[in-house]
Length: 121
Ligand code: SF4
Figure 1 (tube, rainbow, N blue to C red):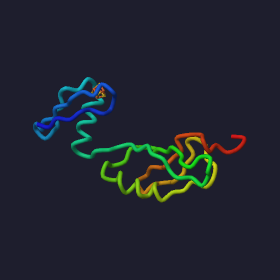
Figure 2 (figure 1 turned 90 degrees about the horizontal axis):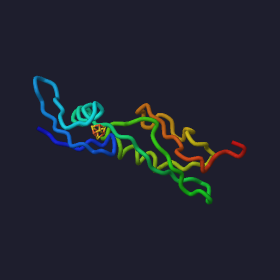
Figure 3 (figure 1 turned 60 degrees about the vertical axis):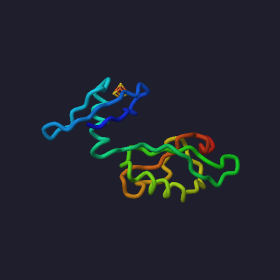
């Protein structure tokens, strides 16, 4: 039996997971999303990523960014290295793509703020 805390919502249910007959039985979850989270966490854990990137604009030296979808948990550090190599040198609106298909994972790095919104945008 494994025990883990669901991080899908602030309620933070404590989940118990037990392998039975080739499937993972989940208890302690307050909703179905917790069962889905537990099975994913024990087979192929995924994470979203919100961080910042450097910019070339002295007024806005860093810009909040996020990935467009979850990535495998094991790819967080390589993706952070790729993000740390980026310097935004063009205006970009919120939701604008800064890095396409990061490390070939099929997700984009997008602006999470309008701090560098193009003039007139
Ligand atoms: S199991 Fe459902 S209610 Fe409980 S923390 Fe996860 S998402 Fe929230």
